Length: 115
Image 1 (cartoon, rainbow, N blue to C red):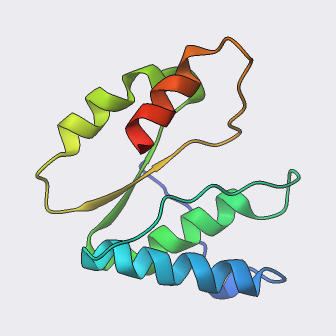
Image 2: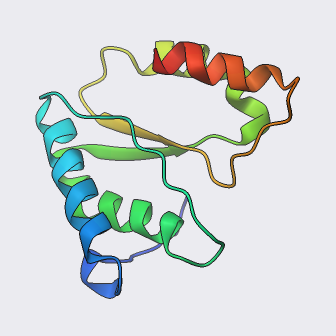
């Protein structure tokens, strides 16, 4: 994205616990130590996407990068991961507005990559 959002963690209010937990996890991830996958859920407008973008801005100088993957492109997730393997940067793969139908093949693809 040529003009990324410049949100800061301090810009986000009312989600201090979520910021603290995800920031700690992101710092671990950037440092190459064990970190967890994260699933943010909640009503529209509660700051989920903003939190991810603020974390990117907070840790970009340490090599954190963000790749947004459309829900329909999750079937290509294994190929995306293969392309990123061995790169020095640390990548967050971000899928906004994620939902699945009962017979949606992208759910199984996402589950297999996360496992």
